[in-house]
Image (tube, rainbow, N blue to C red; front, side):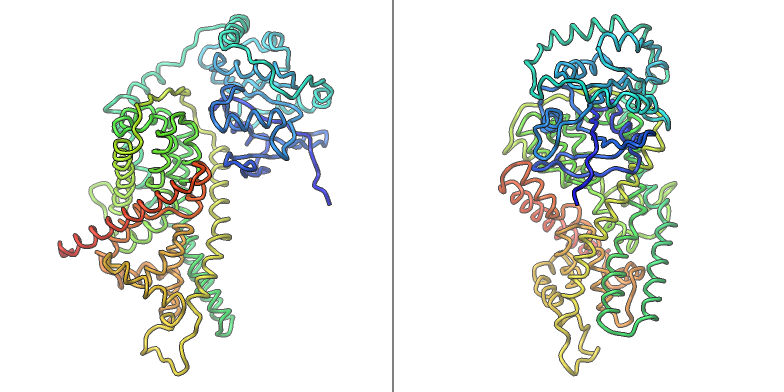
Length: 624
């Protein structure tokens, strides 16, 4: 049966014009996120149901400043509009989203779209902010000047898209009858000619004096101050890491209790055998051990989305531009490196905005050193097991420790970038050119959708790669079975299994770091995804214990079985830990060479081994 094909509208606009917020408002949870075929540019598609019963497919295209592409993202946007992407029909109607507070920049793209002869609707977004700033926009005159329908939208309000939806309901079919002279790109107008047209239109439709308000200026005077601004930024990041530990305690305890109850119930309901062992020791101890960290990951992303939606993140990028320049990185490297706190993959993909190849390559090579969310379960497990729960002054000691680990990752990235740029990738400093949006009250709807998307991605990983690896690890940890006549006095049965033998072999490599054979086993599946290391420890220790230890018992088990030097050594290992395989694959795709991912894996492994060795030996020497 062939899939139903709907008419398509494409949202096109400059970055930061509110295009994605409008997409979320129009499609709600009815959206899918994937990549365009052959490239790693994100493809977001959703559906919009009109009152007349018609369903439209809505595509959120990557942000673009022009139809003369300067980055891979802009190239994809142009190809989709022109219908040149394989398997991707040209959109039936283009919705050009513009920022009402920055029409001088946004209208140039609209004029280029109109010159293609395609059906275009202009959505003037953030109209409420423009009015608050004292700007008066004549929409009817703008419609006459552009020769296409113009509507007002406020993407951060629940019904802020209704004018656009009503327009599509009333006139969508009429747009389809518009003759398309060609799907090709007409001869480009010169930038000077475009700018003259923009100035003429603005003179006709815009009046009033822009007044961003004293509050915004006073806030910028502090937030972007070279000294006070850095203190504000450090305080904000510090409070985020405090919240990650203090706010997540109750939901994490609830998930632990649920996992423990599920394990106990399974033990009482099933007879002893391989299937019960798989469910209790593999699925519940392994997958449950990772699932318990979902609240901490969501709290971290809540703050990242909050800062992004409020307009603070571009200011933080501008503030740190000077710092980035001192280690030889482009100021544009801040956004990719910041994205790497969530995951190195989108961070590496975001380096496409860096025009200079050497600057881009240096940013790609250090992006994995930023502490991604997959490290959080490992950090949380070890900190929870070895750092006492007490306060230092007003602060939680565990939160302080986590903050220190994130700082260690940032300093490491800066140090490695400094070395790379001086011995290998020498190039001149590229200053950051950034458009600062006004401060906004974050939209709770956008925050909710962003967290829902993050939770869905995490659960998909738990149910996909993590579940698969846990089942595989359980199998390798269970078979071959111990020989006939084996007793517990001869050691855990797992020692006779394939994983047990592999762990004992790897222990020769990792014993100088203080790692036992259980840790050595967990490092192997951790190559596929770092958080799997926690689940692997849960499975290995559960199978090593005689009393079927559950996931919630992992923390006290390692606290009792490991030395403090081993715990610190493992933390140091994961600050630099070799990158997961999916990230190496993305580096291969972005650099079009295996040379760079192999070099990345080698230098990260060397740094991780050296850091763990020094940490372990120093801790032993200090007698801690």
